[in-house]
Length: 252
Image (cartoon, rainbow, N blue to C red; front, side, top):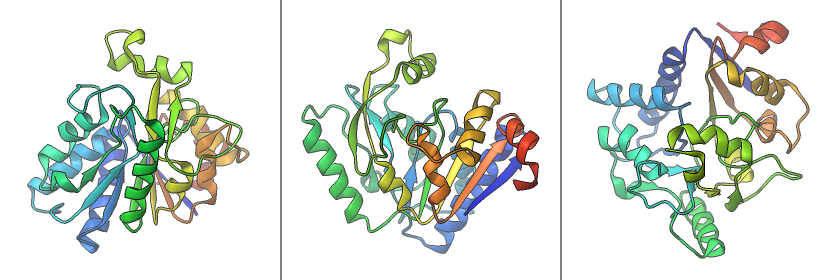
């Protein structure tokens, strides 16, 4: 079941998503959080850090597992997702860094790293809430459009469109890694709850295709239509096509 929540802007969407995550953590102190990176969840992490500072939530017993990591970047590289998570959330709350997990982007044995991450994922006993963004081509995690849905962790070759989209974070497009380790779609779908964040006009068309078009691995996010509990937090611009075509499905 998918619930689509309207927000006037990305800050409001992030705040609503943060409250959802905090509610889960307050209900289950040792919750397992599946986390995402990129611009989509930044406002959510900002609000979660503020909620911690206000004493409204604690991450002391929380465990987290991230969707993905660039292959070839050290965890201290300022564009690695390990760095992103420390900068945007982990260093700002009381989570034990030993209970935070990401793929090792420097592991040269891809099969070993995928197997290790699958075993780690299974050892956590299930993800209570999985946070997702959506790529311009419909990817979730780094699961790119394909002929089939991935199941477990894989080493993914990034599409040209993803590399171009991510080049804004690097000095030049040639500096963007061309591969990444990514949790599989099968693993994402196991989460008890999924939060999908989308902001900006550029995401409007792909968000509508994912939520209302055919379910196909050519639009990886479309598989979320089969998930048991999905909440979409999107701003007005990202919802523009859905508001035009399916306004009755949007919760204000």
